[in-house]
Amino acid sequence: MNTRESGREITNLPIPDGARNEQTFELGFVTEDVAGTVEKQRSAGVPILLEPTEKPWGQVVAYAADPGGHYIEICTSIG
Image (cartoon, rainbow, N blue to C red; front, side, top):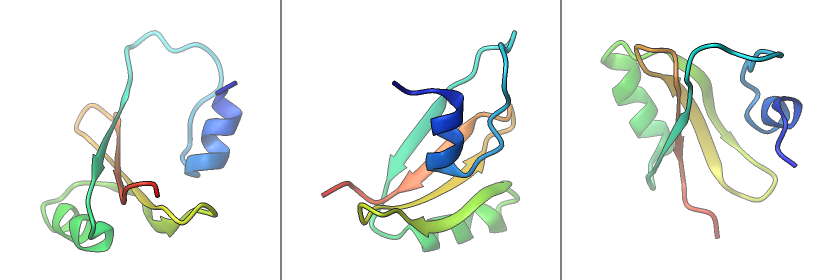
């Protein structure tokens, strides 16, 4: 089961508790160069929420925010 608590644990993002009134979503982009993509986004003024991090399963992920505050996952492929 995917809960907000497990989402916080997996992403290290400040996912709020409780119901939200606004619509939200996460959009993911797969790339071989997560760090380079993050730097391009940072230089364009995009807020970086989580620096590139290697997960226990070997995937590298980072998170940025779009202007509406939605999470954007920048990651390598799994496997």
